[in-house]
Length: 294
Image 1 (cartoon, rainbow, N blue to C red):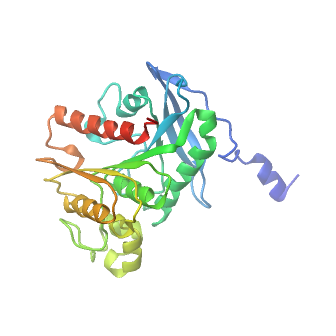
Image 2 (cartoon, rainbow, N blue to C red):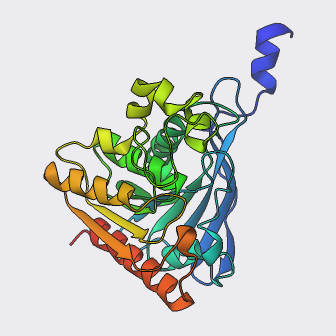
Image 3 (tube, rainbow, N blue to C red):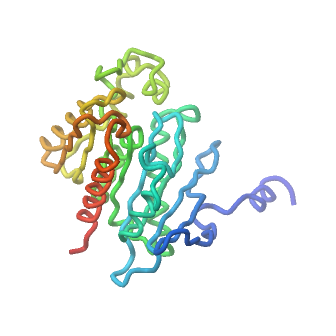
């Protein structure tokens, strides 16, 4: 057997059909599945996700889903990282969410050194499709999904929430919403910014692409509720990104809760631990409210 037939035979199983790995119990009441392939775009590495699931199937049926998108300026980052202020938590933030009754999927996406926008958005959309397909096996109800992202991941989570009609809500921590205009330290004419690397050129040089990559420009009537949390002392992503997005959502008739955190820099730097805990708890409360069947 040679040629295409052999290549097909020896290839890894397609993520839609591949057996799921066994779950591990590392925290009481929580099961973990790590490194699950969900998608492989042509010419790209396999993309994986990590899952945190409630320990046993709930009597009320499949668990709702949090789809988490990591930050890192679109050029770095790790899928299971909610930011530096949560790295030492025990249990970690995703185990806490699962223990509260929601499944969590933390997803890879292609970084700007691998592929330009819209590749990363296509990837998180593919993750949601895979979770919908494999949800019955996992005990997950992807029809009750809240997307949650921080920084660059908040940008992608915003776009996913605005593009996918079935998303129940979005938790966005200090995410960029506008790649077209100068805000804080960002200048659209600069070809060396993370935004330029994401688009493949300075945003000012590719205005249509910059607009397509801006959640602010993609607000629509019928958008799901957003919780936008942003520090008023953010030196990396100006607070005006979240304020403008909240105003646009409200103008379109959507619900948008803007929580401005006094004294907080990017990544919640400058805040006492108790305040970071409060931000997390309020975000989790939003998830529960948006995915409750009651």
